[in-house]
Each structure stands twice: as structure tokens, then as C-alpha cells.
Image (cartoon, rainbow, N blue to C red; front, top):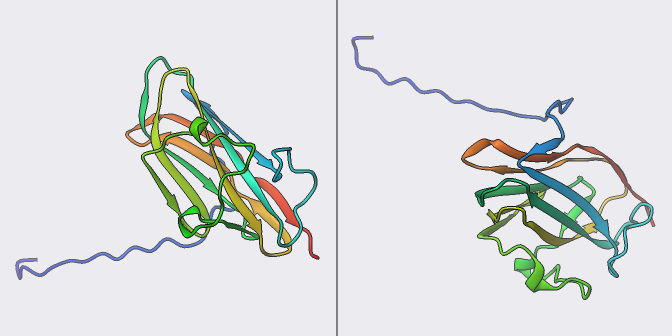
Length: 169
């Protein structure tokens, strides 16, 4: 238009995929997730309302080079809440040695997910552990977890989604 007017675009995205057809597995990276009780044993059965337990993510770099700028994102079910360590909650369990955990560059804690950012050396496996609490009884979708090199989309790892349950009192 010759009038020199401005054009604006507002875009909104809502909802979630009904089917997550992204492949699980990985390329250059491997990701594993475990749910552990307060004593470090695998969680048996469904958590009960008010229970706290730990999520342990293990990320392995299978490539021959250090991979920088990795974003490791873990989404949690609607019935769980992350015990935010920045608020003085969710301390490390006795069975975990903090010196053996991934020395991340940054951690972002939100209501529905936690993201860790950092580098992983060639052929190295790193771990992160964080505490969650079961806050709502019911059956919930258990979102997947993913890791990717932020500037190289060819390097990734993904755990597929599932389902989980929180038992009432």
C-alpha cells in the first residue's frame, strides 16, 4: 500500500498435541528417567497424595565431541508439583552425592516442567535429580522428556509419554 501504513500480526497457539508422533530414542544423545523413593529405591506402585519422591534423569553423550548448549527438559504430570530448590525445598537426598551431579550452566523451574542447560563431554553420562510432590489425586498423562543441542537439531534424545496415577488418601 502506498499510504505507508503498518501491518501487525498477532499469533496465538493453544492446547497440546493429541498424538505426539515425534520419535523416541536419540541421535548422539541417550536419555533415561527413573522415579525413586526417599531412600533411592525405584518407586513401587503409584504415589499417594502428599508423597514426595525424586526424578533422576541420566543423559549420555555418545558422540566423539563435547556437546555444548544442551537443553534437557522434563515435563511433569498435572498431579505433581516440583519442589523448587530455589525456594528452600527439594534438597538433595542422602543417597545422592551432589559432586557427582551435572554441573549445569542454568536451571529453569516452572509449574509444569524443569529445564537444565549445559555441556556434556564425549562419552560421558551426567545426572540430575529433583524432588516432586503428588498434589492431586487422579490419573494423568505422563509427558515425555527431551534433550537437544540447541544449535544443532541433529543431536537429540527423547523419552516417549505415558500415563501415571496419584492415589487418594
